[in-house]
Structure formats: C-alpha cells, structure tokens
Length: 140
Image 1 (cartoon, helix red, strand yellow):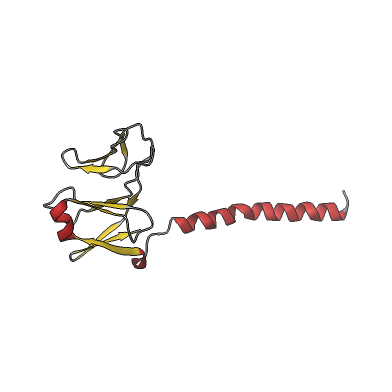
Image 2 (image 1 turned 90 degrees about the vertical axis):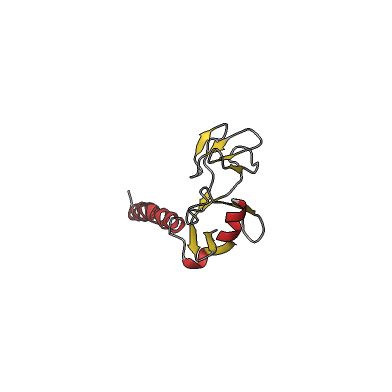
C-alpha cells in the first residue's frame, strides 16, 4: 500500500468516526424542553370549565383539543392533537368514559393519549400545559 492510499483510508476513517457525533447533536436538539417563549395562550380556565373541552384550529400549527377531565380540579388540563393516528379523523372527548374516541373507527385513547383500543396503534400527540391564573398556556 502506498502512502497516498494509506492517507486516504485514514481520512475516511476520521470522517466515519465523527458521523455518530453529528447524529447525536441533531437528535438532542429535538429533545430539549420547551422554553417559556414556546407556550401560547389558547384559552382560559373559565372558558374550559363552562364547556369541558375546547377545540382550537386557528393560530396553531396543528389542531389542539383542550380537555378538563375533572371540573373540580381546574389545574389538570389535558392538551392533545385530536388527529387520530389511524386515518386522520378528529377524535372527541368522552367525559363519561374519560377517554378520547375516534368517530370513524371507534379507536379509543386514554387521558395521556395512549391507545386503549384499536385499530389505531400509535398514541395521540400531547402538549405540555401550564396554568397561569386563568390563562391556559400550551407548548405548541
């Protein structure tokens, strides 16, 4: 093996060994917690108490369904993307069963968005929620 071939292989080896570091850098960026600037005011607690749920479609990149599962505990607000992971229908909150239900194929999701009954196999996307006085702030 001549000197030029050897140096080419060493260069390729150095590049290949740095590739996992580059991948890790990009994947860590997606896992950072939401900053205060990432939270948007979507509704008020008093609005949510009167209806029990609010579907927000405007002013957000994806729809957000706000749910107050227990009207006596106004600090426990759930925010999910209501798009069913099976075929994209909009799920609704069923307060008597404390679950999200898809009207198209009857998939059922628990309060955390996890699948309870299929045909959906992937959970609903959920959002972090903060309560500031009467304001409901959601990380969207």
